[in-house]
Amino acid sequence: MTSFSTIDIFSELSSPMRIEILFCISEHDVKLSQIAKDLDTTIQNLQRHVTRLIRSGLIEKNLDGTMSLTPIGKMALLQLPAFEFLSQHQRFFHNHSFKGIPEYLLLRIGELRNSELIENTMEGMQKIMNHASNTQEYHFGITNLISLDMLDTAKKNLKRNVQYKIVYGKNTTAPGGYNTSPKRKFWQKGIDTKQIQEKFLDEVPINMTVSEQEAHLWFSNKNTKEADGKIFFSKDPAFRHWCLDLFEHYWRDLETVEPFKINEIDTFEEKMS
Amino acid sequence: MIPRINQHKSELLKAISNPLRRKILQNVSFGENSFSRLGKTTNTSEKIIEFHTNRLIKSGLLEWNKNNDIFLSEFGKVVLAKISAISFLEKNKDFFLTHDFGDIPADLSNRIGDLYESKTVYGIPANFTTTKQIVNSAKKYVYCIFTQPPVLIADLMKQKMEKGIKVCLLFGKNSVVPIESNFVKILELATKTCHKNLKKRITERVGINLMMNEKHSLLMFQHKGDGIDMHNSLISSENNFHNWCSEFFYQKWNDAESICRIR
Image (cartoon, each protein chain N blue to C red):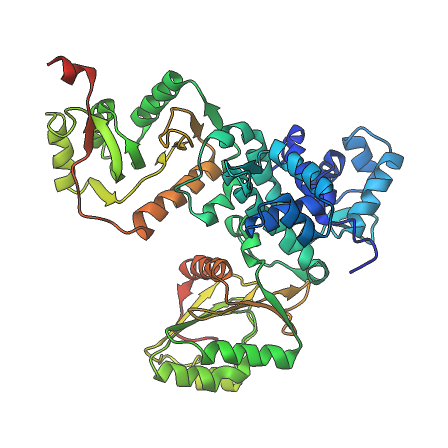
């Protein structure tokens, strides 16, 4: 190790100015003068930072005087979106759990950065309904909370040949009357024709739905251990790709149990009758 | 293109930029839950530990439980896992200053921290022995991606195939495979016939040498702008490393075409 052991990658990444310089260089090999122009500062200001970045192995000077990222610099920058996402939602994750997400997907959590967190439950529910209605090709879901509206939308979607794959857990709940509802007749037909496929697992700690257009993801509240209506939405391809991989994990990797009847919770209507 | 990040969110990065704070996070994850224990293992005063711990608590990475023990929050666990990605780069900085990461896809780059628990093996003899060991100790399978195959292990591979071990070899159109070598002859790579336990595929480009069995994995990287470096490798028997290598292998394998013979 060199004598500059206090200059390590971590200390370099803790400076906003140095991160700006790294992003500038990541776009194309540039000369110092160009960086100064892009970042609206002086070469003098940059010099100190650039020297540190070279010493820490993140950038290098080329023969033609331009700067470029080293392979380490590129790799290091690729880790930043994860820190950005976690930092941006620090307050959220103070109250919510990552339970149900395998470690290798947690390492890739930066792929969720282009998303919107809707904290208003009603707004979220409306967006979910819209999302479901817009689906054209497939609807893959991991769910611990079922709504009856879902059945209405599914009926229309099945006529348009949308493929459904749903994963349930023993902890999954639906409103009272779900299992015996007449709306379930076509759902059963869909299962018979294999347009709908279902899997049953011991536990499903999170909710996620992904289609060819968009995806949404909701984490459980740490205290209530249930989804609390604060939902991440996105149409971003990286977000969708992450969700598809999460779905694959539930569909392909986890042990299934004997199919069970979904737990119904009492609704006001039921109590009335 | 590397996605730009929002600058205002660098508070978390500042929190982990201090090496003592990173050490505290790591040691807490190992079960050191008090100022006194942390002070002892990091050789610092409890007062300084307290200062840094409070900073980490403010950043949501650590929390107190009802017994007054310090714990990593779930948030802290995820951040610590991401820290290992950067620690991996730091640990192998000298190596990667002269080598390339090759063709690692984005999702596996995000998981580069999985490679942290690994050893570097130096020298051609040591690396040759290690490749032999991977083939030798295989009980179910040997999966390989070769930019340049280690030609001297052909006999060993053939023996394992006869014993029922499945061998999968993946080459790239850029791979250097000496057609006249024993490797090609013994494994019958240039003929149409194929041993039932051998599968061969070819893909557009390969940039990393990989050899793995159901337990151990080995990675070799390219010299910058040159060929594969057979002097140095990363090896590991650790789970996360193995999962990373498996995922890398399957992604490349599934993208490749079957071949009958190498030309």
